[in-house]
Length: 230
Image (cartoon, rainbow, N blue to C red; front, side, top):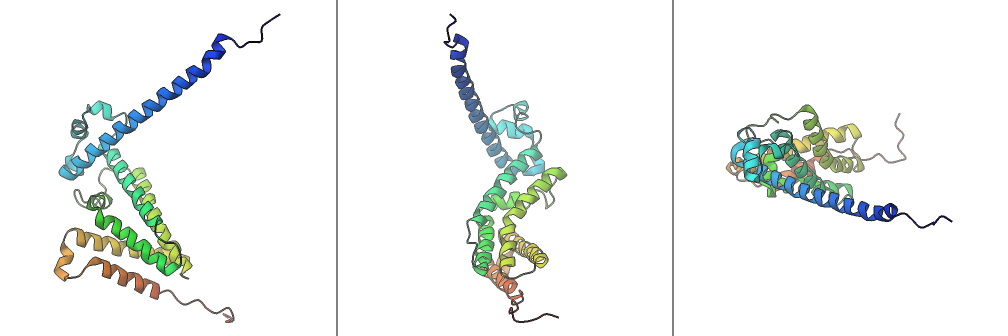
């Protein structure tokens, strides 16, 4: 009579699978630590030398790796830069998402303040976000990388567009107004970040608040239900 007991290989497989899973988990953890070290080294290199002045070799030296080792994580310094900027944009989106979402006027003011405050309090993130290394153009980024980063930036502005719609703004106009709001915030941030705003003896926060109030004031009041539009 044949035994129904499991074979030795069957008994060993779960343990082997568990060991393999644990090993893969350790490898992922090590890879994450190494990637973080590369990004931290790149952050310092970019801010000291600029995007054009930094090189993968310099980033590798600061991280304690060979240039070839970095290729396991990033194919170019532009890819490193895109990773840094992407993480920054994710933090920005989280900051805006933490603001109230209703009522609409309160939400818009809070979300705009959260967006502005994020960059005001993090000048290095501002440098990343607005390409202040060597001028304003996203040098070296592929169109695919640039498009992906732009989508993440827009994700942080989307709550403000929704707030305008909730306040009664037309969908198309809401998109246009949020674009103008972004341009206004960017201008205030750049002027404040570079110290140029001091010549006007004004703080940026009241200027932003005035702009948002004016924006809300441009929204036409909702028509009463009893009014018939010909």
